[in-house]
Length: 163
Image 1 (cartoon, rainbow, N blue to C red):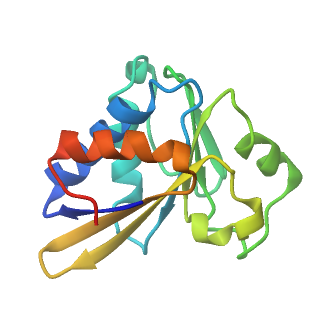
Image 2: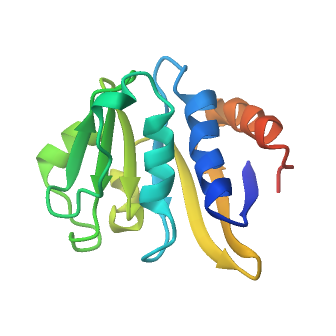
């Protein structure tokens, strides 16, 4: 299943982040969000809106963890925010793999294209952020059939069609 969401301005990107939190965070184990897009595509902005929509967000300062590789925010559920920009494509150390596989945090990964496909979490939703003639778009794809139902709820919440 694939959803194409137009992001005409900043408020649309923020709304998508909040909607992702509303539809996915309540699941017992939310799927990892694998974000792909160039510099300035809105990855960190999307994550900031998602984190700010969760309980405990007042204690979280969302910044891109480019040098740390990962920040963990004290939200419910806790969010592990990865930024793989500084890693070589296909390279990841064992500590990062362990944390990516953790069910104790909701894992959100910027520059997920730097992960080898076999290293991606099995329970994941891929979000491709790209530019368009009207601003940006987000193409969201569920990796597993079990993650399609929340994406349908996301479509309803944002009033967009599958596509």
